Image (cartoon, rainbow, N blue to C red; front, side, top):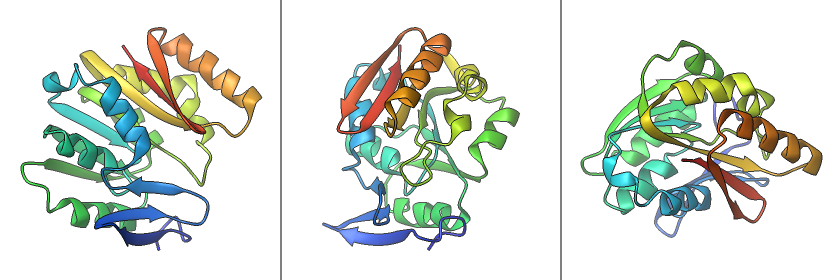
Length: 194
């Protein structure tokens, strides 16, 4: 049970931890499909990645997916829920060569104050199956763009719940990141820049 997400449960399934509830799976070890899709699409770019920012850490599935492919950059993990962040740090502790900086903060507040630059930013923020409005807003996306090092990339996981809203999200995203691809997996759409 998380400190902000009281309906969350931690599971051990096929020797990997999962975080979720009856509605959604937030983390699934190195089997988390949105992270797999992003990593697969960014394969040629990943050898140059030294610093990664993860907004919406969950249990650190993006860390696990990158580690499973042999990448061990420095990670800054931003998670709103202190219990979930604690679980992430405990479950990621077993990974060799991984450098983790945990930050317990609201992503909106963190990004408003952030001055650091990252080679890769992974945005995976949900409340249930819904991406909070601020995450798909132009101001937040611009802050994410400003956090990218020269040549950096952003991957943003989104779930379609309403087609009209999805069309607006695509329009706003394209206004900030004209050069992008959308990778589809069931109801998930992963925007990937560059």
